[in-house]
Length: 205
Image (cartoon, rainbow, N blue to C red; front, side, top):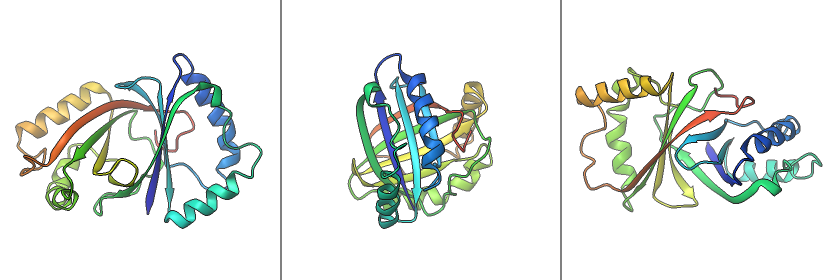
């Protein structure tokens, strides 16, 4: 499985309009394939929407997108709101679950790392031994790394009840020495994060 992550930066004050237009168009698009998630930023880079599309592989993506683009109701009419668009293809880490519909948030933390070249296998090996203990404290929505787009990038997404729940879980995991996974010194170039909320039509909430 692959995930296409499309991140759009919008003009100030247009996020709600873009979400409404996308919701209307998605009613026609989902007959070709359904979203995994649709989020908008609350903390971090503002005026962003992120939509995540699962596909079996790149061939399926090409086929479905070609079919959907023949539909007069797709893509959504949000061109007047757009400042920037980015598309990346991600592979899930082998031990992470699929992004499944359900109510697991409503707060989602999106952690975005650029790692040193060649270090993704090292990170997978270290994280697979630590992830079960960490997810006993709170679930993980997804851990994935880029195949196409910005290279050497990994993203992990964590749902929480609220920001205080996030702080409690992270502080206790660090205090207990179970997270972050040990042995990671020198593997990362940069770290960023942002707090997201799901749009009303997102399958995951």
